[in-house]
Length: 219
Ligand SMILES: N[C@@H](CCC(=O)N[C@@H](CS)C(=O)NCC(=O)O)C(=O)O
Image 1 (cartoon, helix red, strand yellow):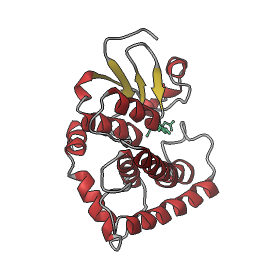
Image 2: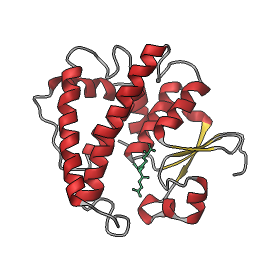
Image 3: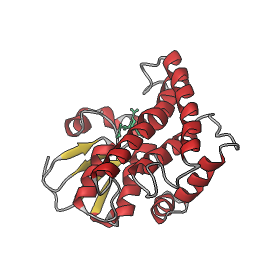
Image 4: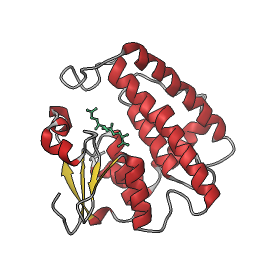
């Protein structure tokens, strides 16, 4: 990897995982320090040899640092960004906060975002027959149930606190928001009765970072 004077973000802005990193960059106020390179995911560019040499996960986003280090996995990228620019913290400022945020981020990732993703990729047409070569419908349908149960679990939690990890917006909220975005690509409905979850979603949508990401998509 050739060293660059800037951070280089390889992604596709409208996709749920890239949204996580872009929103984190806006939260940290450093989006303009990043050069964005669009990856042609729909035509499988991310599975080609050149991309996999940079990111063996064959997924977006991938952030290439000034020294050429390539980071994939949103949680890792956002940890890097949080350490790169101190405030505002997205991953916690003391031991307890870091532990709770990490736990909630993992729950949001495994039980909502990735569960919706598994449903989308395994039990629907997903990204189409060229890219969806290893579907397992039963697994996809089970993950749909996990996602739906998680919506209710988060709704209960949000009855007593504004944000998923407590009283402060964190990376866990970004991950869960990406899960809600992914739901928009599926037939999963978020019941109106989950009022606390809907109120949280409205709070996330009102954040400047999320508005900036949406504006960048022309929404
Ligand atoms: N756990 C990964 C997930 C990345 C991921 O799955 N990204 C999707 C876009 S939202 C992707 O690259 N999909 C390509 C494919 O499924 O082939 C992360 O946190 O970055």
